[in-house]
Image (tube, rainbow, N blue to C red):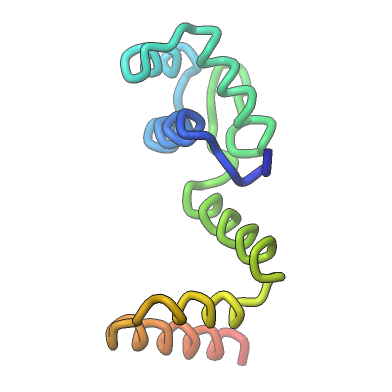
Amino acid sequence: MNQTQLGEMERRFAELIWESAPVGSGELVRLCEERFGWKKSTTYTMLKRLCQRGLFENTGGQVMVLMSREDFSALQGETFLQESFGGSLPHFFAAFTRRNKLSHEEIEQLRQMIENYDEREG
C-alpha cells in the first residue's frame, strides 16, 4: 500500500492521535476501546503501522506526532499529483477545470496564492 494512503480505520485512528497527542499509550488504548471497541492488541497493531509510516512515534509509553495532519495532507496531495499528472500542477488544473467551474472567489484565491508565492521567491 502507498505510504500516503490510509484505510478508513487507520485514518480514524490517526485523527484520534492528532486530536489527543501527546498521549500515553495506556490512555490511547482506553480511547480506542471507547471509540472503536478495540482491544489493546488492535490498538498497538494499528499504532505500529502508523509509526512505521513515519506519522507517529511511541517512545517510553508516550505517543508523539512526527508528521502533522496538515503535512500528511500535503504529502498525499503531492503523491496524487505525481502519480496522476506526472507532478504537473498545470496538467492537474487543466483536467480539474475541464469538469469543474471555478467561482470568482476561487479564482481570486488562486491569484493571491500565486502572488504570495512569487513574493516569497522573488
